[in-house]
Length: 152
Image: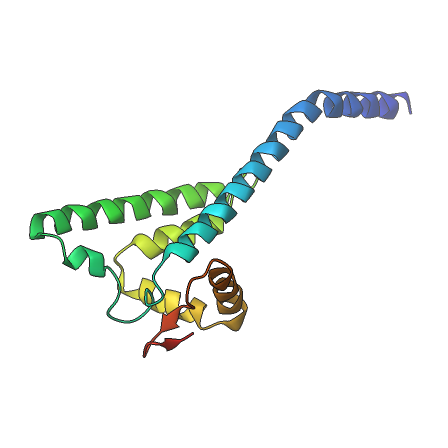
């Protein structure tokens, strides 16, 4: 019985020592969660309404000279890979941040054929599209279009 009491006292002592570290972890988690949600909202509001149309992707790249276009595409893919890798780390237990959201943003930057299908599949879900278009409307932006150019 004395051993159990000693173990309990040791456990409560550990909690007292660890509470400051846990408080900082909670603060870091909350700051990163708010920052990533805000950044995501900013990106969704700034995208053009036809961003998810079949021919609209990377139209800005096509206006660049050939060498600049190649460099911009390479940098965009490197940023996408970095975001996917960061998202994988953030998705680990105990690491504060929005891992899945970071992975999705990184995937959107990569030039992979299946990424466009994934984006359209997600956008076709009313539970995804309705809040996004509501956010865009709040900031005076038109709703996203998809496929044939009709309002999504």
